[in-house]
Image (cartoon, rainbow, N blue to C red; front, side):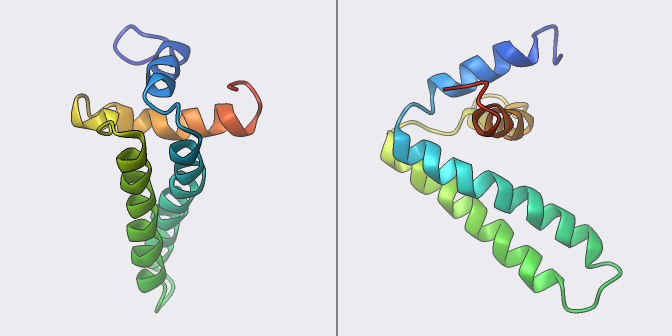
Length: 101
């Protein structure tokens, strides 16, 4: 729960601005790339030469996000409320797990 709203409420609002199938596809690829890049960035503290991969995946993931929003014709939700940066991963998981159509 964030700010008195359930995760389902946040995900439902997020889904409202991600109806275009191409936007959903770019997010389905971009969100995991961003999450993976963050994990690799943390590992890069211990593994030499890993940070360029982390950076590349991070940039590619965000490029896909913005391409999807250009196709949808709507700005990203986090422009209005930064907390939507946390919701995208939950939305992705709901899509992948079949909880969200």
